[in-house]
Image (cartoon, rainbow, N blue to C red):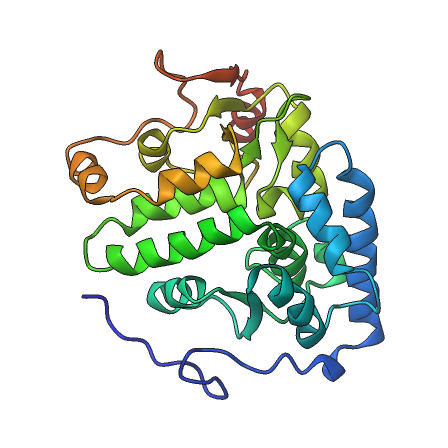
Length: 285
C-alpha cells in the first residue's frame, strides 16, 4: 500500500480548494489571453475536430482566466464533468478518484509571463485550455472516467508506472488519425505552441500506431519534446482499449522489459519513422 499523504493546509479532504477567481490580477488575465490567442491561431488544421468543437463550446476566451463555476455549467450539460481546483499535483489515489467521478483536478495558478513556453508543473492554462475541451466529447469523457476507475484498481499492484505511460501517450501527448492525417488531442501538445508544430511537422519524432501493451512498455520524456507519439485510429478505439480487464496485461508486463523510447519495431504500424535528429542534438549540447 502507498503511504497516505494528508492534504495541505487550506485544502479539503479530497484536496480541492476554492478557485478564488477574484484574486487573479489584470496581468494574470492578460497572460491567459496572450496564451489563448497564440494557441487558438495555431490549432485549426492541427488539432482534432473534437478539441476544436470543445474549445468553441466552452468559450474559454471570454473575460480572461475562466471561472470554474461558469465553465462547469456548460461542461456539466455536455458530459457531466466538472473542473475542481487543487493546490498542485495530487496523490495518485486522489487523482484517480476525481477522474472516476468525472471531476478534473486543475491547478489554479497561471505561469509567469517569462514562462510562456515551458514550466515544470502544470498550470491553469495547461489544465483548462489543454484538457477540458476534450472533456466535452462524450467518448473521450468516458475514456477519462474509465482511466480513473482503472487507476483505482491498479493501486497496490506496482504497475502505476505502466499505467502512467498510457495517460502520457494519450491524454497528454496523443495524436488521432483522420483522413487528412494525424491531428492533435493531447493536452501537453495543444497547450504548447512549440510542440503543436513539432508533434505534427518535424521529421525527428516517430509517429506510431496506438498499441496498448507497446505504449505501457515505452518510457517518455518529461523535460523536452517527445521522441515518439502514438496515433489512435479513433476515440472509440481508445475507449475500448481502456475498458478491457488489465489483469492479463499487467501479468504480461511483469515479464517484459521496457522498449527504448526511440525504437521502431517491426510490429509497429508506422506513420513516421523519425530521424531522432532533435533528440540527438539535445544530447550533444
